[in-house]
Image (cartoon, rainbow, N blue to C red; front, side, top):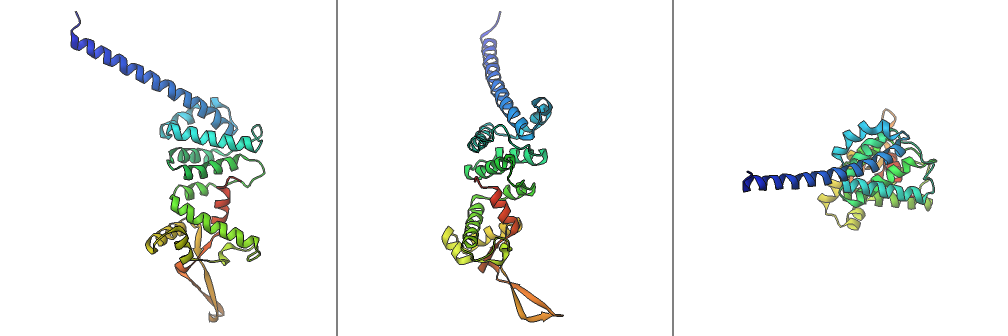
Amino acid sequence: MIDDNTKETVVAVSDAAKEIASATTATMAVAEKAGGFLARVLGDSPENLVGIISDKIRFWRWERQLRLIDKVETIIKARSIAGSTRPVPPKFALPLIEQASLESEDSLQDLWVNLLANAMTPGLAEPKTSYIEVLKQLDPIDVAVLSNIYLNYIRSVASGKIPESDSPTRLGFNGEDIMRYHGLNRGQFEAVIDNLLRVRCVTFLRLSGSDITIDGTPIFTDKGYDSICLTTLGKHFVSACQSG
């Protein structure tokens, strides 16, 4: 005869089993959708990617992964290339999808979305794997400052202030103006610039003193935080993370 305690245990186990079954069904649905999407990204068959999915799915948060997929699909559809996307190398696609699926900030995940969608779009420059390392080290304020510097650089090119073929490091933007625009104090501003310097997206404006030389070579000095330049890497990185 089964006592009351045993009955309660059986009921609890049954309820737990139902919850596990429900979670398993949800996991399979997400894995199936992810598998088909990843096959399209990499230009391979889902059967060949089962092992990769199994290894990676543990690190992906479901909601963020589905948001990534839906956003990329929307861009691909808008560009009318749904049936002719470009396969993306696994060493670029896999770490990108993993990092993007772990990103909780929508504004930052949208950059991952654009980076992947651009990588899949024929005719666009193929993004470098190094962009993944750059993007995963940026916070929203870093992106905001970098994007603003990039926008002002593009405006300067459009106005003829600097040729597009020239190095963006020849054009400096006032540090005080950047601080004021983003509402940053000096410490916050320098912390942002330090991080952007670390990932080589910006640099300090360098000036040459033509009247001071060593063995005939002009000495260069920089203006530090007073004048910030976009680097060539920063220029191409921001471009690769834009939607259009």
